[in-house]
Structure formats: C-alpha cells, structure tokens
Image (cartoon, rainbow, N blue to C red; front, side):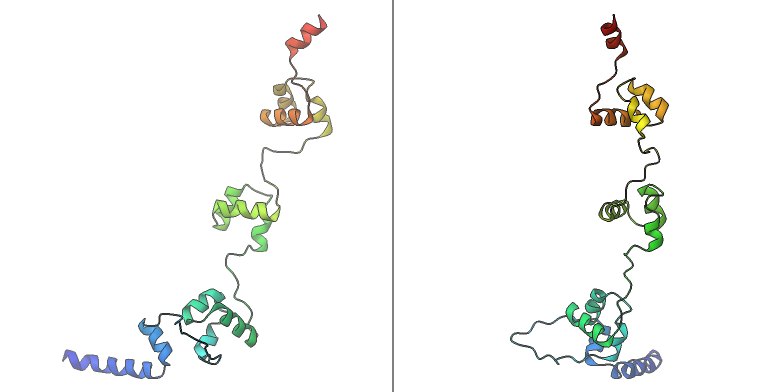
Length: 189
C-alpha cells in the first residue's frame, strides 16, 4: 500500500523534470557545480540562454544571478544589456531620505533608524563630505574669539556655551596665551 501511494508522486516528478533542460535538472537536484573548466577554446554559442535564465535578469543583482545560473558575471551583464533590462536596485545604496538624515542627528541615531551599522554610517559621512552632527558643537563668532586669552578658559566656556576643551583648542589654534590672573597681578604690581 505504501508503494502505490508513492507512485503518482514519482510520476509527477518525472513529468516535471522531463519538461526541464538537463542543466536545470542538475541545478534542481543540486548536481550543478557552476562553471566547469574546459581546456582549449570554447565556442561562443556553447550554452544558449533559456527562458528561465532570462526571467531572472534584472530581478536580482548580476553577481547573484551569475552564481545561480552558473554563468560568468560578464556574460550575465552582456545579456541583460542586450535585452534592454535595467539593473536590479541595489539594496545597499543610500536613498535620498537616508542621506537627508546626515547633519540632523548623530551617526548612532542614523544607524539605528536606517538599520545600517555604525561603521558604515561613519564611512558614508566621510566619503560624502558631510560634516559631523554634534549637538554640543557650534560655530565660533568673532566676539567669542576675541575673549580667548583675555580671561580664563573656564570663564570663556561659561559665557559662550562652548565646551571647555573646545575653548582650549581654539585658543591654542589662534596662538593666544593662557590667561592667568595671578601672573597678571604680578606684572601690574
């Protein structure tokens, strides 16, 4: 009784496989090993394209299609262009909405919202020339720069709202000396 119930399934499988090419059957059964090496020159029309192969073009990236059907990347690319099929969209490319996030929030927040890794977001910021988005950082005004070296760094930081380290770095960058009230009192005395 067990043999009779399997027979229609075997017949259906044979009919299905009979409708496929040898290469497609090998791929379905897991016997297709991809590109086979041959010695000597190969004919250009060695393996004509089949409909199922053409149907895959443009739906996935060319390297993925090439690996699935066992053809070279150049061959897949040429066939897709020959048929006028556009490239499949690359899911790793940055969309306009994702690029608009740069400059509005820190990298960690962009990574969280886009589902990308933090190193990838930082690399995109560097390669695209986006400036850092630091909520503490703000540009220096001329009046604020005039205070550097005339009063202590802590006082300048308190007045301007810049971090103390930022005040120190800007003072050194401008070549202004550190203001020391005890030293000034010695000179005036």
